Amino acid sequence: MKDYIEERVLALAEYIVSTNSTVRAAAKRFKVSKSTVHKDVTERLQEISPSLAAQVKAVLDVNKAERHIRGGLATREKYNHIKEDE
Image (cartoon, rainbow, N blue to C red):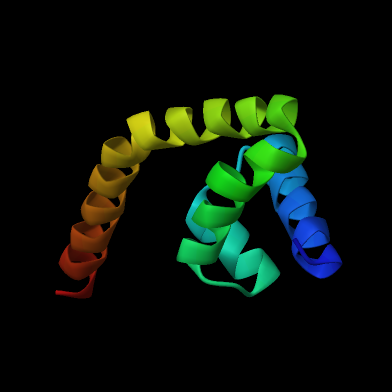
């Protein structure tokens, strides 16, 4: 694995763990695709640091469990703005 990829993988993992970030937010912060973030933290990180990979997996599992709630809140907010404009 190339050095710059390994550095990106570790930086992404540390960012996700420290901020409880989503894959989407991490991708935006590091200016890479969501697919790249996902591959980095699920496959590549396992080879580099299994313990850090476990921490990232725990954060991502929580985010996955909560995503339907965030989606519902976003939809509610969207329709509240529409009502206010009328």
